[in-house]
Length: 481
Image 1 (tube, rainbow, N blue to C red):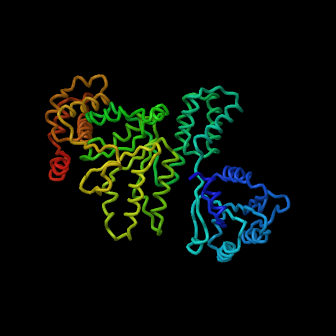
Image 2: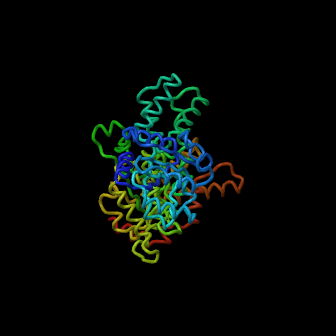
Image 3: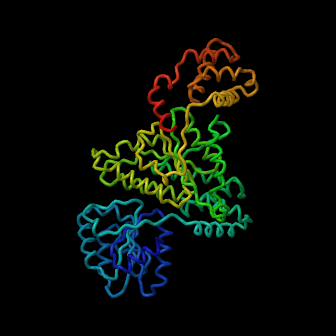
């Protein structure tokens, strides 16, 4: 529901105590004043701990450093005149017994008066849960960001194309208007112009925002799909959808891809693929640490998963990477955590099925047996890919890519065909480690040249995971046949 529509509904239905989560106080106040333009007889009052009430000249200074007095002032106003009282950062005082009691009394008494508590996070004592209604103030929409950018561009007399403005608007989604203003100013200070230079500054700002959540982690990636050996079917699937998040695709009528699940043996390039997709598609990569979703307080885990979804959708278009999802939800049918894991899982899977935002999910798993059936049914992901141990041809490609990276001028001198012949059952990660081991050997013997023989020796003196964990890998391969 639209925020102003939801707020207006709450006011009409006499919800007298409303709690709004936001860090954008100025923008929230502007939106509420826009709503009140249609309500000519309403009064508007704003309070904070340092200034008291400050926007009405007659009430200036009332309730300075006295939150109880702020409530009493609202209580004493005439009932016949509709009024809104915004109390900033008031969540910090809700645990006080006098504040708790006063709010309960007000919730019973108020008819045409409304208290709006603003805070950056939800902190409501159990005793006030029945008295307070919570709504979230969303981050700026595309239209709001575009309007702000056009205003800033006009102030600086810059001439930007519509296409560039669209790209900047898309990149700025998930940021507050104040942060967008600062980014714009920084770009002008550093470059005196706005071209392709804007993207790194915006990504850096997004990284700061994301990392502060402690649920999602922002990842930079320089990986390319061309540097990953094999996985040709997956690469083709990704190539077809590479422009699916564009405005042009939307106008064509294409639905936004939901995501994909990569299941396979450890070390076969699942994580590397996730990073490469983000780089190829020029989208932010946000890693979800599922372990951090589970908090110690009752209801905290459910709140965190909702917060994650809200941040992801605000940052769209973006990629959410969930690594080893099979380990995260192995206990969803257990009652040992009072059903918390199950509720978090249910919220996540519902979102995966119903989301309309441009958020692409990449989940990786090593063990198909551990994945709940609800997660892998149709509708959660667009496609499930099995990433098997590389074939001989794929190993040849992996050796070539890795040797080209460390010996770009001489990689053709190595007997790559023979190396791929004798490295059966080795994963891509293990092949990389074999080459590194061979380099250590050559370096320790003071030889400036790494030889094919060194890599052969490394292969002969190691055992791949596929040999030590044969039963698990064979079972996984049989499941997908």
